[in-house]
Structure formats: C-alpha cells, structure tokens
Amino acid sequence: MGKYAQYRTPPLCQSKLLCTSLLYLFSVMFLALYNALSPTKCLFRSSPFDPIQAPLFSYPSTYGEHNHAFPTHRSSCSSPVYFSDYWPVLEEIQNLCRNFSAFAPNLRYMMEDGDTFGGTFSTNRRLSYFNHSNESEELPCGFFKKFPISNSDRIEMENCNGVVVVSAIFDDHDKIRQPKGLGSKTLDNVCFFMFIDDVTLKGFRYHQLIPRKVLDYKIGAWRIVKVSRKNLYSNPAKNVVIPKYLVHRLFPNSKYSIWINAQLQLMVDPLLLIHALVVAEDVDMAIPKHPFFIHTMEEAMATARWKKWWDVESLQRQMETYCKNGLQPWSSNKPYPTDVPNTAIILRKHGLSNNLFSCLLYNELEAFNPRDQLPFAYVRDLMSPKLKLNMFEEEVLEQIAAEYRHNLKRVRSSIRDEESYTTQRTKRARSDLIVNSSCCSRCQNYLSEVWDEAHK
Image 1 (cartoon, rainbow, N blue to C red):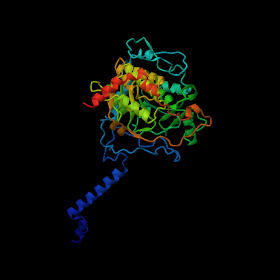
Image 2: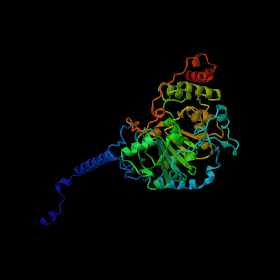
Image 3: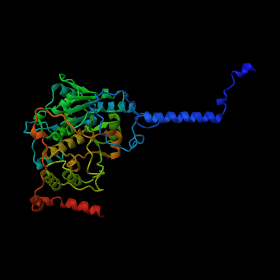
Image 4: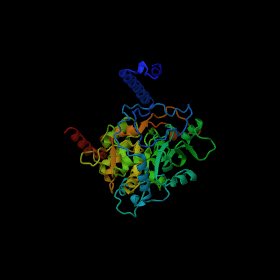
C-alpha cells in the first residue's frame, strides 16, 4: 500500500474547480501582460507585414525624436483598411513595376533656362496646359534651374526603379523618424529619401546623427539628400514643394511613390499601403480627406485667419483667379467626396494622369504660394485626362501614421539669410480690393452656391 501512496495525486490538485481556477488565473495574467507589452495593444494579432522588430537606428537621448506626439483614441486593432498578406503583395508589386506599359505614355517636359526653378508663366499660359490631348506637347514642370544636389545623390535617385518613400525637413522644422512595421524584404524593394537643407544638416551634426566628413549620409532607412537653398527659394516651405510634387521627375524610374510629411511617422509597410490604397482601388493617387473642410474657400479663409500664409492680399487674388477660370464649390455632383485634402501623405502611381496633375499643381504653387490645398480642386476638376483619385477617410491616416509636433527649438546656421528666416509680417488685404475692385465679384457665385447648399 505504501508503494502506491507515493504516486497518489497531491490533494491540492484533486479539486477540478481549484485546477480550473488556477488555469483561468494564469491565463488572465498572461493575456494582461501580453496586452501591456504589445505595441499594438491587440491580443494575438498576427501581423500581415512580417515586420522587422529591431530598431532601424539608435538615436542619442538628447535628440528626442519621439517627443510631443499627438494622442489618438483610435484602436490599432480595428483598421478601416484591409491589408493583404505581405508576401503576395510584395510579389504583385514587383511584377507591376516590371510592366513598363502600365505606366506609359510619358509626358514631355520643357527644358530651358529660367529666372526661377519653376519658371514664370501667366495664368492663361498655365491654364492652356490643363487639357493634355497632344502627347508631343511639352509641359512646364519645374527644373528651369538645376536642382542643387550632389551627383552621387542624383545617381541613387535615378537607380530607384520601384517604390520610393519621400519626405523633407527644411529649416530644422521636424525630427527625423524611422518607419515602423517594415517587412523583411521591404528595404530591398523600397527606397527611402529624406531631403534636407543646410540648417537641418547642421542640426543632424549637432546631435551626432551623421559624421561631419561623410558625403553620403544615411540615417536608418533614410538616405539623406542635402539641397542647397541658395539656388532655390528663400522660403523653406516652397522648397519642400519640389520633392513633394515633382517626385516623378526627381525619381524618373520609380513606378510608385509615397510622400509623407516629416511631422508623421509611417507605421505600416509602404508596399501594403500602395497595394491597399492605390493598386486595389485602381487609382492614380490616394490622399486623405481634410477632417473639417469640404470647400476650397473654407481652406482659403482658414489660411488667412490662422496666418498660414502672410500675404492675405495674394490669397484673395489667387481665389479670384480660380473662381474666374472655373473653380466650383463642392457638391454631390462631383465624383469626389470633398474639394479639400489633407496633403500630409500622398500615394501615387507614376502614370500620365498623376504626373500631369503634379506638374499642373506645382505650377500653381510656383505662381502663388506653397499652400497646396488651395489649387487642389481647381487643377483636379479642370485637367484632362481626369485623375482617378481615392480620397480616404481621416481615420485611415491615424491608423497608418503617427503625428508629432514640430520642433520648438531649432538649430540655426551661423550664416543667416534674413529674408529666408525672418518671420514675415502679415500683409492684410487692402480695403479697396474688397470694396471697390470689380475683381472681387468673381467668387460671388461660388459663395452663393455654398450658402444655398448649406441652407437647403
């Protein structure tokens, strides 16, 4: 009897209720710990993008690249966009990029010397290029002065043959942040380029992100391209517009691109984004909707009210020009859900319609100011051939990117261009422009339609 007693089950485990309770307790503790440590806060969520877990770059503690993030209350477990599995997406986009006929025909661009990088064209001259029915016609699309970058950077940009992710930090306005959620083969198939100016470069060196005597810079996933502002615009925001809208010219062999403001950190693999928002939707461009405005005039008034552009008089002339030449307020008759985008992130297929739109919109920014939401609907609605556009909800942007505040303290260059870095005093509209000028009746029909629509 004593022989069998030593194999008897301990009394503690003889109760089924007790065993079940202990199992439940340990399970709950494990799930709670997993949820607390999981970056997605999702229980057993299988990642569709085979992510790289190791950090792409180790920042010094003094840099504070993750300070001042805007909070979001949306759960990352419930994405409004369906992302296919990483490996089929990778293969599909590789095959698409090899099919050159899908991105033809190409535009022909004007090549001549000019006083400015974008050239100087009248309103009627710019408008004459909106209807692109003749494939042999040359189109103005910047580069009337040489883009001031190194030859090694230019060669690397031309060698980018597939998908490119582009951003820019001028005037040391933001921190550089690494993309997250990248698949294991993404860095082999996607190029990451960050354009900076001399002031931002000095900030990088101050924080020891790059060595002082190295010509080709790379910080994590990003290849750093230094742009000399002396041959471009005195306003840093206008210089940002060049890589933002002329990406198809800077990367002539790329097939897809993602522009992302440096204020945002990409949280989803760019191949999945291109596939879900552009390829699967069969569009030329994907861009989020503005969270508040649907009419261009609303954005124009907010630009003046919040001093997003200092010359209010030129803003008024710009809107009068657009109203005169055919800008209509948004209505349900338009095939787009809004006239105002959030241009913090733009996903593109580099085909005819997208490239035409980008050139035409850049010409408007060159003529007026870098506030790119103002000419957006004007160019989109009047151009031909038409742009196939996916204007997705703002909540999608919150799922695919984290937003941070701009730098509060910036590193300034020892040689300062006062015109470039001195804050412009707001130039209000003249009273006679508002009261006596016949020009200001040009937007009355626009405003009347908005008023009538709002009071139906």
